Image (cartoon, one colour):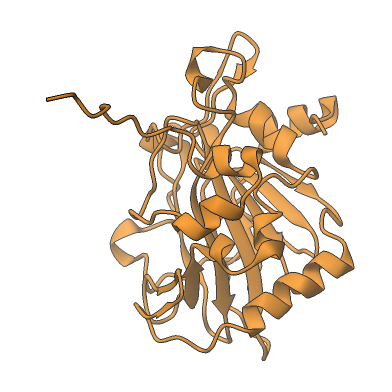
Length: 275
């Protein structure tokens, strides 16, 4: 479904929108069941084609290449609740930018965090990074990366919610409360970072945001585990952020549209020459 005029306005103004109940209860149950089948992994360990990646000891575990974990995760690649919106905000469809396909997923992961775990505040429009840029030109969006963050558990204020600074995707100066040199110890909370907001979510809600916005996640206070899934969409000419590649088995079983999003470019090789 294309974004509504209200969603377009709010995405431009805030840098994000929330899609309530984008995933139904059956989808959430199936996704959690897939994660439950993955054994507890130490950082840098593999389970099939799923890799346990960690930025720091208090950031939790990221199960990278989570679309390799089963069909429920494959269905998220082109989920109708957000795919058309993502394509609209990434922009370029029907233009020279999309010779290879509508969009490309350059990173996909399940993030698992327990008590005390969160992520430092980062990003912001002042960086001017092309990969994460926010730009609107002649009435068209051209965003370098639009994230679909899916809640698989309820995430209230003490559950480690995502924290955003609305409008910071357009900022020209760094946020004065975000100290890059101390980013691993200065945890992001509404109290710590002026003008930020906590995005509380129910399981099945999806947060769409441009990666240029200043964002992070407050440390979880409650017992239990915060579970989210993030698929990062960008232009079809992009490349994988961490160097992962989809497995041949995944590509073989994907639908044509999903395969085009996962691997937009067709690899060309010379034909054998007669001797």
